[in-house]
Length: 343
Ligand code: KG4
Ligand code: ZN
Image 1: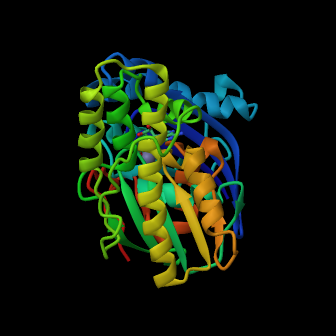
Image 2: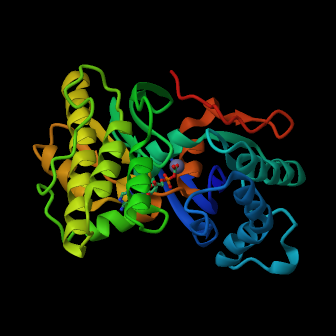
């Protein structure tokens, strides 16, 4: 099965072409038109600006993916050898989602191929399976992105249940907002993790909100405020202080998400642990989880870094494995900004 996958839920126009067979899915072409340089000017994503940028780039990005596979640009609108189209239906920014959804509907109708309206979070869950194999179930997934922090229990490949989520800010958002008060560019996560390499993670004792709480829920608003107050209390900011602050702040986030996940693993005894979302690119988090689960009682699958931040390959994988949960028709498909993961 050959799948054309499209993702436009936030600030990346992403397209991938994948081959799927049995329990395996492989990316054959992947193109992402990043809007980071545009949003950097505003220090964050402006939905209307994002949607306009998607509208400009969506068709050239799809075309580029086919060109990567050697397609003839003159015959672009003839039906290519594609068996299905997968597109992110939600959650996300409604105006951004509609650009990808509209392009997918148009192509599904023109080429007369099945269409899948995929949940973006299930995409992040399946990101560690792209270019690999379906894991053993039950599985537990930790999703840490700019918009979401969730722990999801997977009974099997089509049964997903959210068992914990953030009550306020997401982990990526906590990184981005602290970066902003430190005067670092958007998106802040990669900037903080780079500076953290030179800092002492024990220099500042930032709070670990809800770490001891019995639920699997998260809260990062208190940490964010504490980070801001610490910056405001410094008379002079030096490079050393900034690196220490980045390392200490990152350590607080890593401690909270990894200890909650470890507790969920103890309770639910999954065979596989999956990590996904932009913050899954964070080396400190990857190292901590690798150390925590090295006894091998559950197999930890980390996504390739190119599949951590928003990408279309993960959407193709979720469509393939999620199958009937996402299958729809081009007439029925609509953007669903509040799309929830459930059993
Ligand atoms: O999954 P994603 O691309 O978008 C959403 O679906 O939200 O995640 C983007 C988030 C941003 O907050 C960004 O700062 C964060 O992922 N991020 C990181 C790293 N790379 C990206 N956070 C920490 N360390 C990183 N290396
Ligand atoms: Zn995402």
